[in-house]
Length: 130
Image (cartoon, rainbow, N blue to C red; front, side, top):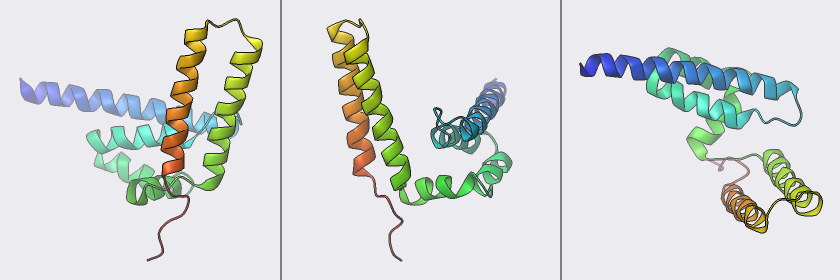
């Protein structure tokens, strides 16, 4: 019975992985949608479900380099940091200045964005010199 459950889990993770690859590809063409976070989730799903697809994405000529930078060195490139922090700032300004969201929702958004910003800023922007 465990083998059936494991096979079902692997199939589910592969489906989720391919869904995130699709979202990442869309994000490569739409400036408001990120690519790398979706590909990171896909890479994780493939790591748990398919060595073949994990290797394909990990060594992909376009998507592979930032994924390898993250998986090996936990690097977030400077351009990605600037984009993420700018997007968070614009979102907060919009919600606080132009929406009718309740104060607790604004506070929750602010706290979540602050936690995300702290995480992003705590990671290096470049690979360590070897």
